[in-house]
Amino acid sequence: MAPSDLSSAPVPPVSDDDHVKGPESGTLVIEYADFECPYCAAVSLKLNDRPLRRAFRHFPVRSSHPRAWAAACAAEAAAAQGRFWEMHDLLFGDQARLEDPHLWDRARELGLDLQRFDADRRSDAVIARVKRDFESGIRAGVATTPTLFADGRSYAGNLDAATLDAL
Amino acid sequence: MIEAGNPAPSFSLARADGSKFTNADLDGQTTVLVFYPFAFSPVCTDQMNLYQEVLEELSERGATLYGVSCDATWSQTAFKEKLGVTIEQLSDFEPKGAVCEAFGVYHPGGFPQRALVIIGPDGVVKWSYQAESPGDLPGANLIFDGLGSV
Image (cartoon, rainbow over all chains, first blue to last red):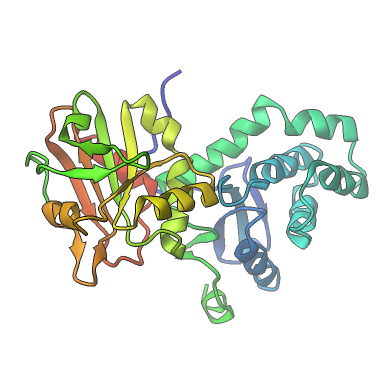
C-alpha cells in the first residue's frame, strides 16, 4: 500500500459522511478534537451553547491521550447506529472513564446493539475512518487540540468565550 | 539558520547511551532533526506527541526523526519515557549549544530555536524551517512538505 500523503493540503470541505449538527444558517465550524483532551471537552461545551453549524473530526494523539483512539472508534461505532452526537456528549461528559467497560456502559445507556457496537469499533472501516480524519488534520496543519476552522481561519487551544462569540 | 543546499556542518551530539551521533550517522538515510527548546515544556511536549503519530509515515519515506535540545541526556531520556514516545533524543549539552550554533538555530536565551532540518543521505541539507517564535508548534505537514525536496 502506498504511504499516506501527509503534505500540506487545505482542510477538506464537509462531506456527507462528516458528523454535522446545528442550524443550517449558523457559521460552519470544522472541529478537530480528541475525546480525552480536556480543552476539547471545555470548548465543546461552549460550542453547544452557540448557534453554530458544527462538523466534528477526530484528532486523537495517542501518547498524550492513550484512550483517545478507542474513544474515537467508539463514537464511530455509535455513529453506525445513528447515535454519534449522543456518544460524543457522553464521552466528553466524563473523561476519567474511558476504558472498555465505560464505553460499554455508554453504549448500553444509548440503547445500542452492544455486540454490533463492539464489532464495529474494532473494525477496519472504523479505524480507517478515524485515520482519515486524523490525516486530513495533519495535512491542514493541526498541531494541537482542539483546532477549529471557520471562515478560512483556524483557532487552536482552549478558546475563550469571546473568541467563540466572534465566530 | 542553515539553508538547503549546504552540507551539514561537522557536528557531534550525545545519544542516550553515551555514544555520539555525528555526520557519519547521516550516511544513507534521510534525517529529520527537530530542534526544540526545553524537555518537559508544554509546546515541546505537544510537538513530540504529535510527531510520534507520524513516525510510521516518515519511515515509509526512508526518513528518521530525532529530537535535539541542549538538555542533558538524562533529562531527555526522562522526557521521552514520561511521554511514552520512541523518538530518539540527541543532546547538545556539552559544549552547550555548539551544534545549534553550527546549524544557526541557537536562541540568544541559551536554548535551541524551534527548528526543523532535513538532511539527505548525501549529508546535504535539503530543507530547513524555523518557527517564528519558540512558542509556535510547526505542524507535521511541514516535515512532509520538506521531504518533497529530498
